[in-house]
Image 1: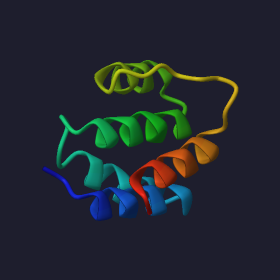
Image 2: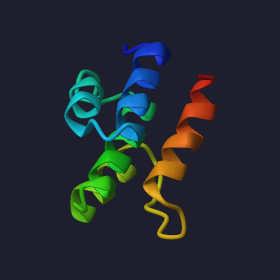
Image 3: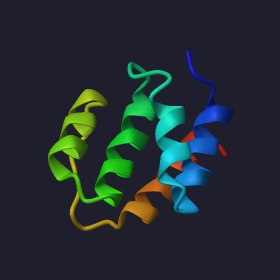
Image 4: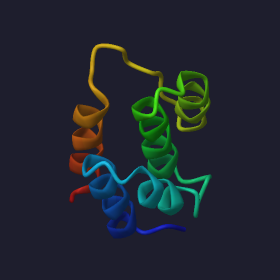
Length: 82
């Protein structure tokens, strides 16, 4: 199980534009709901919407077109308590 602290680091990397570091972190636990959610947003950032939809489905969420990926990462940050 991946820690919330580690997931918060992935969010920070995503917000800073370091997709590779963020992606490496979330790939450590592909069953964690938050890791899958972050993974989905990262793929949105890179423009890979089919892959993003896959990861949203893995965490029981849907891609929301009305919110920027960065704003969604901030939502995740709050949900993690970071």
